[in-house]
Image 1 (cartoon, helix red, strand yellow):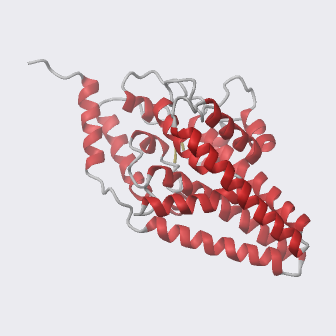
Image 2 (cartoon, one colour):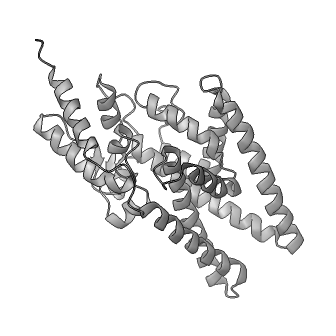
Image 3 (cartoon, one colour):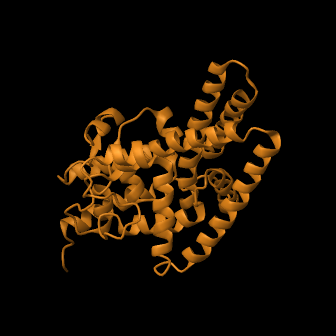
Length: 305
């Protein structure tokens, strides 16, 4: 009988860590969405109804923060780990995405390719341009939301032959975005607040888009081609884990535990911290390098400079 290789033994033990976790999130996703929608409503009320300029600015900042974390939650909808109803997840994700012209349904299929190709294929639609000497300033400060949207629409068009359903999803997103934006612009014109609406949209696009660009850089920059053969290990070492407080991890849907997420994308966000601990202990036991990571987002950002 042939003895399994050390790598095979390691992978089997890692898979046992995953099998010991619950498959359904314990209500955290629904609670988070409800809290963020309430925060978004409060911010909108302040921006549109308050008289002092400072309160209006605070409202706009609250809208930007709420929309950022709501857009992050749509990532979980791609993996069906946000709620217990996949159809409701997708409808909710479209309602969050289309007002900001974000093509959720196209992104859903592109994100599946990202998980398949991360660290293995240069066609990865979420791969960062390695030729950029200053990706932080280019992506976060200049491209922000518009750059992220343009990249996603372009990738959906270019890869429509790889995933045939991308063609249909792209049509759905374009139609949905056009209809929603037309309705919102028409309402703003009817109420005589077109400039205020455009200002709010641009501010949210800059702030939310910049944060989302930063998040993507932190999670994968410099880890595109890890020296591993096994697909599971490629995902673990091709993603970066950030140590954060439970509250921030909750708001970000478990994304700081990005190595564990890439290795096991069906694990709900509330289970990822525990899974990360188990993975790190298993790697240590087998004398493998620790997961790529940073002590906090400040350190991770400093590494990008």
